[in-house]
Length: 53
Length: 232
Image: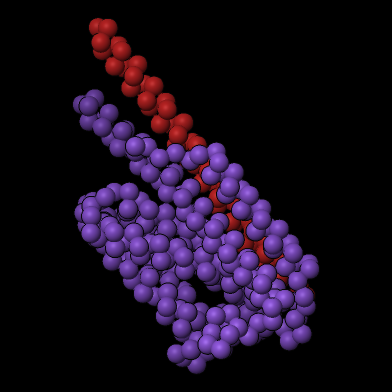
């Protein structure tokens, strides 16, 4: 393997790791936010039903 | 009050990420050739910034460990977990890029050298933190054990940094920050310093995004637990 191939390997590894980790956490955050919104909606629906009955 | 990931912070993180990519493209194709090491020296532009990012994560972890030790605030422990996650990633990347650099220069992927061994110990400590965080159920025990490991991690950082000075090592000595000024030529040093600065900002952004996600996840879990208890 040529020396420059080691350089490409290191750059690719770091760039992919940093980018994927940041994007993955942003994705997880929005997924958790969606779950939080759904739970909140369900809670308020249950509260309304309880009040009506 | 619930903390949110704002669009402006998200935009800022992506801008920082792409500034770093721009710098790395510059260093890969336009930074000057180094006569002694040849092209392999370019690994320096990714290896050193990720090492500093690991150190930053360790210091922020220690800061929140001390805070968590003093007061039983759950968000401090969540911040500690975010630091340990990012710190582990950065330490593993430091070891991996170091190995990639070692193969063409030393002729081996790994050597039980003081710098490499102490960095491996740093990765193991980050891993130990994450394992304890997930395995200990009792909240107060988790807070204290994680804080102790967090402080141990921060103590290990100066040992990693000074290891090339304190013991005989085949790892190159400190060349960026040393007594008598840097031994790196300005054409190489300034892009390297820029890479380190931008990488540290990106690490801070990643830490914050990770923290916000972990906090939201924790809130969701608490709500689910409460509704389960209420349903019984």
